[in-house]
Image 1 (spheres, each protein chain N blue to C red):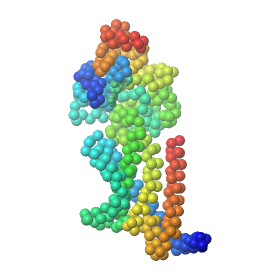
Image 2: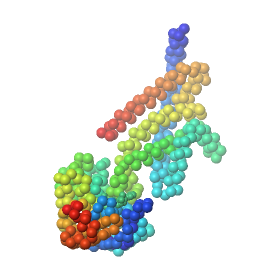
Image 3: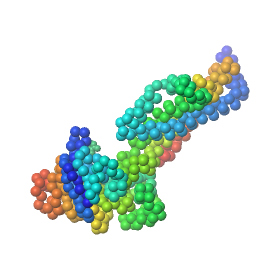
Image 4: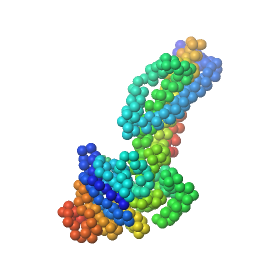
Length: 225
Length: 240
Ligand SMILES: Nc1ncnc2c1ncn2[C@@H]1O[C@H](COP(=O)(O)OP(=O)(O)OP(=O)(O)O)[C@@H](O)[C@H]1O
Ligand SMILES: [Mg+2]
């Protein structure tokens, strides 16, 4: 009996793959796109939030810290819900995909700002002092001396954040935004199959995440060499 | 050239400098000596405001650089600083280490900055290292690079904070030679050092610091041969 069930399942998986391969490809595309948007904009805003937090101005520093703590200490799914309902409330009407993107970006910003802050702080303070003693401004020092050196630590961590986000974006499927979990939900709705499309999605997530993490680890070793 | 008046510096409750007043004239070479923790580095770092004095003022060529609204970056261009741990920029080539500040701060023409850098490197025997990264340099070479990096800004004063303390003994000489050459050009210098022989040889005046004050200031002859201060006598008996 066990073998009978296994063979039906194998058959179903083949059938789902055959009928819905385009949907899986699309799901992978949206998942990667969401992670890419989150990390790209998260890096831009995260740099800004990191600088706020490290500012000697107490108010700026408080705002930076508050932002980071707020987003890191509440669930992402709750944040996504809030943006979904808050944005229309304040007169911003976005597609679900755009609204989810905003939520993911703001959430990722908090995590990335900590990556950037620790990257910056890993650079010996003597580097800053030498640059300032040559007459470089605070901004020039950051741009030409500190950030290029911090990159060695920041880049691998950003790449890991991208891998994390690939998995986190699955929460966005709650709002049917076309990502890989949305693919599962669509197939589930059409075929009433659950485990089969879940297994397929799981394998895809695993392969994406595993290969990218290994790639990052490899690049990290190269960068440090 | 530099006057500092009633400089005090506190880190929290710790008073590191206590109402220090002195001056350094143009072309003068002053060494700062004294026991560890006496405030030598802090005083030196106050000169270019890497440490901001808690009170007192610093006049550079008559201008109060501790006043509100002063652009400290323009003053720092005129004061080169050399650190104990070199602090050369590891991500830039030797040549870029030198040209970076003149090009970006003084807006010097790149070609001109390059020629100047090569001249300076030649002077300290590092011309053939222009295109390597600092990891490839020995400690002595790094410190020579740090000195010419500061020189490239054509400063009017050079500040040295224990420039040879982090070096292997066999490399101390080459760095001291570069500083002595600089002295011959008439550069105004303040040098924190534990090399008493060097201080004696190069200085016009020596400041002995103890417990946050300049306990005695005078010519090397006076400081090393006929010290008045008891703490200085004790210090010299330990280090000489
Ligand atoms: N950023 C800082 N925060 C707190 N305390 C400091 C700081 N910098 C220096 N100090 C303290 O100030 C005192 C004087 O330090 P300073 O570095 O000026 O001494 P020094 O004479 O240069 O000593 P050394 O010969 O060991 O270099 C020391 O007790 C030191 O611990
Ligand atoms: Mg010191």
